Image (cartoon, rainbow over all chains, first blue to last red; front, side):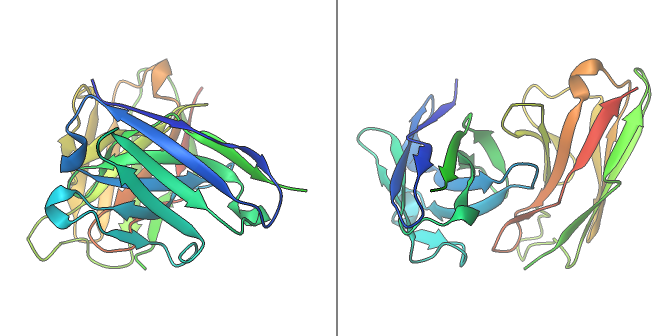
Length: 119
Length: 112
């Protein structure tokens, strides 16, 4: 059974940093692109970025809205996905999901973790 | 960016009834490889989105045949037949053809 479990959310002050983690299980982690997606309350999901699979060199791409502030990485020995978020702003407040990418769609999502940026 | 426009914003249906949700994209979703990467997701209250339909009309594993997707190019539809209480939530369409991947703004389904 595919499982994705995020951790690391909470309250952070504007300008602060936070790292989210996503533990993956039930599939061959290195075969898949992995995404981070966020969803402000009452709004549609927004992709933040992704990291490619082994066959594509684990390279990354980012949404321009977070490029330069957010960094995605993965530990393939531990089946872990990470999102390092720096210089956080109030508008980064949202529920953050990790998701597995099939071909053109997100087939599995984690349960999500809330990040609140506020003083 | 490809803009995904969903209608209606919300709808109410009786149990056992049928509903259709429309999703239109600002550009064709036909990929260079010939596939059309239009998917549908359901976000039940308090849960993460779950995949229902991928590549326009393919039901994901474990998804009831009460859910069906159709369409082509820029115009797509999700139909839900014999609506059940567990179907309530927000439905999103999403495109995976062009980066950045984008989602529609959602359609909230309520049960009368």
